[in-house]
Image 1 (cartoon, rainbow, N blue to C red):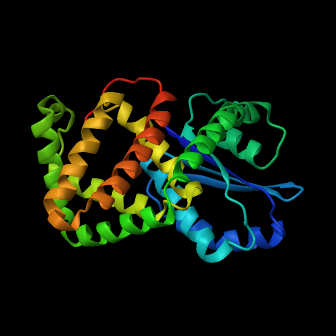
Image 2 (image 1 turned 90 degrees about the vertical axis):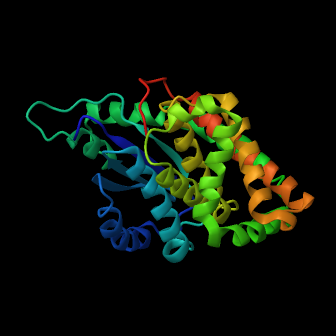
Amino acid sequence: MSNNAYLTVRRYEGVPDSKQAASRVQEFIPLISKIPGFISYYLVDEGDGVTVSVSVFTTREAEEESNRLAADFIKQHLAPLLPNPPQITAGQVVARATPSGSSNDSAIGAAARGGDSENGCACLAQQMSKSSRATARRKRADSTNAELTPRKLQVLRETFSLLEPHAGNAGLAFYRNLFNSAPSLRPLFQSSIELQARKLMEALSYTIATFEQPEALLPVLEAMGRRHVSYGVVDEHYDIAIQAMLQTFAQMLEAKFSSEARDAWEEALFFVARVMKRGAADAAVPKQVHR
């Protein structure tokens, strides 16, 4: 395993037929293995209707992409066999041990397969020790999500559909508004603003598409929050970004950005910010890096 590794554990309960689920997952493995940075994937049958998958990657971006890919695959091919949203634990592997002379990922592999490797179990246990805290955060976030009524979700999607054909310009307008309101944030962005604008609108599109799928959305937002710590983002910056985004919608949509639309977007953006802050709170503050 490389020096940097990121692991995702998905625990599915209420699985009616674990053997059939495992058979279907064979179709998923070629897809996930094509993600750049893929290291390994394991599927474990715990019995009593519980199935656990473990995937390992060299980058956090690959880990996040795997969560999106898994959510899409389950929705299309495995929904009857995996009827309940998974409990997801995801993050960087911060400690590991391997038997002398073995391959680097054998400890994780042994633990994932249910083997008796004490070192491998310790490695996974350190990741799983955060599961209860992550589950609690997701439950709190779920209750916040429930405040977004079907009507508000409809308004979000209608307004975003108007903006999406002009996503490139909207992304650039957001960063203009952001830097005009807070010039001190400009040094945090040293890569192409055009690229950042595209990533922003892709993230917004994914958020709108998965607002009613917390098992897919929340881990991604939490991971984004953890990653933004390394960029130098602090809690106060989220409020500035929200106002810049609302200003961008008003500029781009003009009269079509009604007071009802503004209220819905403000609530949705504050929800996103809260979940990202929870992810950031779990991250140790590393040396700042530039995007």
